[in-house]
Length: 219
Image 1 (cartoon, rainbow, N blue to C red):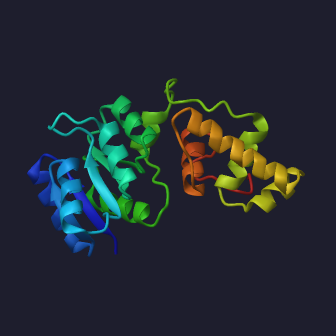
Image 2 (cartoon, helix red, strand yellow):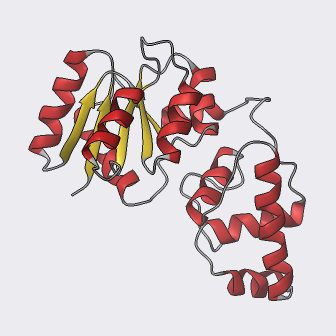
């Protein structure tokens, strides 16, 4: 089971989540009200980063969601935003900073637990809150991918090996590899890095290149 850290400035929220995670045999290694407290705990205890940090979108210490997500991701954790879904701009900021996804505080506890398990397994989290935050956002760093790059990304991100992508499109393996490299560079240029295949799938879903139930066969 995964290790989880809870960061929320409402103690009642943390206590509820702690109880739920314990019933689900998840290990809560830290529970506190700020990212700085979590990082201090990491430093003083020498503990490994939590696999997943459940982070409130807005904390009462004056920190921004971009600062918080960036610090946690740089420290080695995957971040799930746990918040009321009424601030799409802040949610977009969290996603662009590297958060793995969003779960509403109105969600059933089972849905929250499912989200944590999904992210802990290294899989992208796709849900209604995510989609509504990203949909139609003209400021969400358009990477300006070409038609060929979008096709390469769609096939590769949804599961095909790069060699199979090249064969499917009738191009050389080196050409397909070049396309993926250019795609990654373009996403970095707009502040949405995608260093792994999971990240590329996330970007493809964000940009509507891959449907939420994307099929690598294209059917």
